[in-house]
Amino acid sequence: MDRLFKKKKKVKVTIEYNGEDRISTLTDDVIHQILNLQNLTLELRSTKDYSIPCPQLVNLEIKTQIHYDDRKGEIVVSAPKLSTFTSVGIFSITFGASKLDNVYLKLRGSIDYSDYSRKELKEIFQRFTYMLPALGSAKILNLELHTIKALSLIPDFLASSPPPFYNLKYVKLPHGYKEASLSSSLRSYLLGGSPTATIVTTSRENMIHQIAAASVTAVDNDSVVLVGAAVEGSCNDQVSSSRKNIDSGLWQGNEVNSESVCLLDQIMKKYPETFEHLDTKNKKFCTMKLNMLCTAVNDFIKIPVTEVDTEIIVEYRDVFADLQKLGFNLSWLVTRLNNIEQLWFPQPLLPKLHATDCQDYDAKSILQDIQIRIDDANIKLQDLQTLRAEKMQEIQKAFKTMDTNLVVGYVGDDLLSGL
Image (cartoon, rainbow, N blue to C red; front, side, top):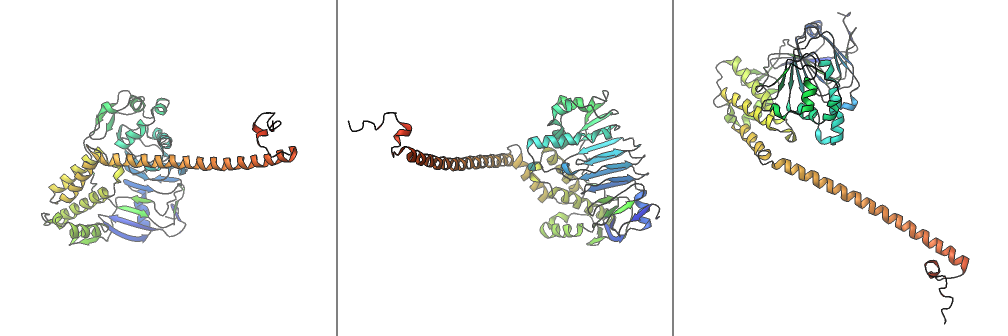
């Protein structure tokens, strides 16, 4: 295996399967797993070149929150069997011989919109389009609401850019989004290279992912180099695969994800009614339900309030309804969802509050600018007054007169003052 892998240092990896967790060094078995993955999720938090040589890979998801200006590296994918690709964020990517069937473009959670002006956001979203030609072979393009909003912000740029997709059969809009709301510039950009493609509205996606796949997660600041592929994984880069492991967390006799134990303890302590009607006879099914609950709760509580929209409200209302059918009492989550909805819709109190805050900030900025100009004007006035006094002294010394009227008055001033 030395021919395939060189190890600069020992790398600690976390292998997860059904919530099981173990820290170990890279072994030949782990190497074999990486090269034979069918499902892979990468979370990239460093600006390096990445090569993904996975001949058996079918599903690939790449997530990043890297600042778009810092993205200097490129991701090269060599996976001839790849059929589904999901991107979360903005990055540069190249595919080998892959012919993609499904492409999911997501931006939600990858950019903090409050950090940028409208002009800066337009520049960011223009860079987002640079990765799209690499996905041109896609047959089905799935768009989320944030992606549509981002592309709709740059209509002039889209109008002057060639359509990136040449093989589309369908463009799927998010649940609840109306086709009529799609701008003409965005429609032309998406369908210009595939005039026979159809725009459809997708049914709601199942937001609770089945936790049956394993993950291999590289941690620490060490790296692994794959000879001929030049892979460098940073300490925070995460790789998810479909392999098995040993250890797991136990919660009331159920082998749940190890990281879920603490969350379930918190829920039991604060909202014990959640589990009152949960059927625990089938341990395996109960474990699956508990893992799904933790996934949904973890995702929900980490959503920034400023990113809440109607799509999120609808999705999580459906998710909670499905979980309640499994026996969970989620009245506390539904109440919070209702409160959020009331704050935002139909009378958007929070947006109005945020808008007021923005106006307040703008007013303070304007006032600060005015104060700076006033201070500058006072300094300039003092300098001019000092300069005038100096010039008056020069005049007095030259003409032996203390009368300032000579400077601003008439030529004959004081000549006949005694008459």
